[in-house]
Amino acid sequence: MTTTTTDPTTRQRPRQRVCILGATGSVGTSTLDVLGRHPERFEVFALTAYSRMDDLLKQCLQGRPRFAAVPTESQARTLREQIKAAGLRTEVLSGAQALCDLAAHPEVDSVMAAIVGAAGLPPCLAAAHSGKRLMLANKEALVVGGALFMNAVSAGGATLLPIDSEHSAIFQCLPEDRARWPGRIDHILLTSSGGPFRRRDPATMASITPDEACAHPNFAMGRKISVDSATMMNKALEVIEARWLFDLTPEQIRVVIHPQQIVHSMVVCRDNSVLAQLGTPDMRVPIAYGLSFPERIESGASQLDFTTLGALSFEAPDFARYPGLALAWQTLQAPMGSTAVLNAANEAAVAAFLERRIRFDQIHTVIARTLDAVLPGGDACDSLDALLALDAHARSSAEQTAKALAT
Image 1 (cartoon, one colour):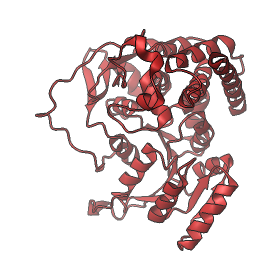
Image 2 (image 1 turned 45 degrees about the vertical axis):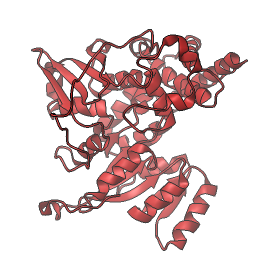
Image 3 (image 1 turned 30 degrees about the horizontal axis):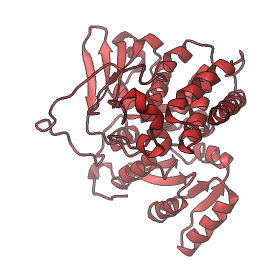
């Protein structure tokens, strides 16, 4: 974390106590960087991590949180010994329930939801039910949870703030009063870099390696998210997320390829004016906005120098190159729960690819076959337990398909 001196007029304000779910990932570490720039405004209350335990220890030594949480009790014992030896008083918890308990903790003001995948849904729901300022970097919470999640936000009185750069851009282009959104929006344009294979010969897709797929042109991200960028499944998930965040019809959501990633997304208004949010490709900008909304604070990101930008280009997405992208609109128009099946199948397929059990071009095959095989029932989205059961069923089906393709 970087510590800087900030506006003295904010020093009397009570500090926000922040829980970071997924602290050792790219969003988590960027969040800690922003927090460190404003020590008079924020307090690191809890950190959780699934892996990179050495990094978590370093974060605890620096941020001195009240709590830390890890997946297993064995990991917790090791971390407790290390924290005790360092003279810290951080309490270490373990298990999935610990994430929900910390997200809903009565002393927590804000929750950064940066866990990757459907595993982030239960703690996100806990934070929503508890009325937290919920900064959502976990798009799967909405892809899987949909109406159930948004109902929890409403019932709990939570403040939901998007952290994905595209959704934050849309949010920043809209009035603070949500009631004015429907009369403002004709449609939105989510931008995408196109990933590392935007110009690659489609005939060579079968030979793509995990390392090639993880080489994002603009952002340093985790391997799963990087593969999603390469297939553009991340954009498919963002289309679904946007449907729920902004209460849009599928037809009101469009995607445009923008390799430079300077324009983060756009709102096309009913009078055909276009509002856009621009900035350097740095996740600290949407993170800082989420932490300080409706104010703005220093993020640490570099300013744009328009004299050196050169051309900004835009093009339509190639659905033949990125067949998974079209599944966003298809699943939004399919029975409720289909988006949860899509997400589960993608997570299983990407894991199989990263483990070199299937080829890159077979990721879409696994997803498409799973969507054909797993049909959500009418009550598939009525509760968290029902959604998790649907998720498990879809993963099992996707895994069977991956095994069949590997033979």
